[in-house]
Length: 404
Image (tube, rainbow, N blue to C red; front, side):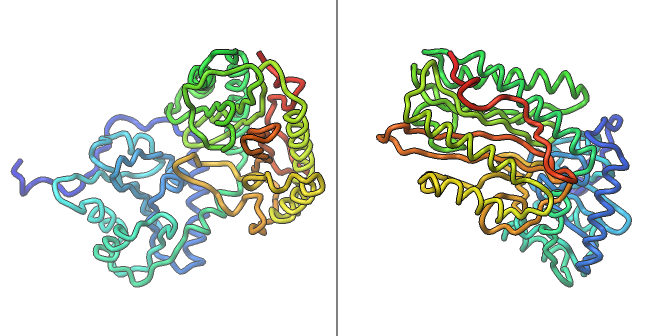
């Protein structure tokens, strides 16, 4: 084959289709919802570029490594566009068709997209993901008559979980508990944060592999923090050695086919001083109060204001560090986020049966004050017809989490 004969893109249907996290009927239903949103917005074709939407509608969770990926959806087709470095895996892990683009020439990705999407059409994009640079290329290769931001509509669809999604999320919550118990067993004076974190991660990955033998295994992680490191919810793990009396923060995150669940708990090593115990108990009380508010018909903002009032009455509101909870689904610390379902003052979304949301109040007491550290409790709840079901089983509070 000469250089001029090298293809810009091609189909590489290598091997047989793998078992995906959900049935074909589930993916067809999701695509039907997307096409309904496209019709409502006047879009003729959708070019979805985010990890969360490609995975949600096609089942394929890509690994970008700086390369672009997409799912192109028309009235009759749904085709993922993937890089040649992945060979046949995107087709095997994909509900529909796949086209592989080559790197023989720059912008072969967009040539493959245009092959499916056509030109001069009304194109739905993800305004929160398509970069300025890629937007220029889209306009160059697709010459869209109109660009329509479909991202808000896709987020609204993802916020409302199917029974199959809820079953997977429920399993994830149980696996997060497994990691929590492994962490609790590993906590001891002189042990490093990283050693405790690895114990929790390993336990969860083994349990995921046991329960989901056909899945891909990646991205499961633990943030286990101690002392000053607990002041932020997303602080990375360090090699700090645990000391008697330390405040500890347990955070387990099993990932199953792109679906995220979490468990977060405040702990103390061997002993807890009086000031710390008061903050801990107050945060537990806010946690229990917040969970009691999660029910259909409540708005995210109303729940948030009620917990704010609860903390303000105890002179604790200045120590609150972020919103009180969020949605669950295809998301992680580097993709996803269903921002329309977060417990914040500026979110007016009404809770509905089938939504899945956390309750996770956090207080951060600055270093140098009695009781310094970050206090977090985190449970996952499924909104039901008349309330909410808590699917987190790991206990919270001093009775169980004063350890070592």
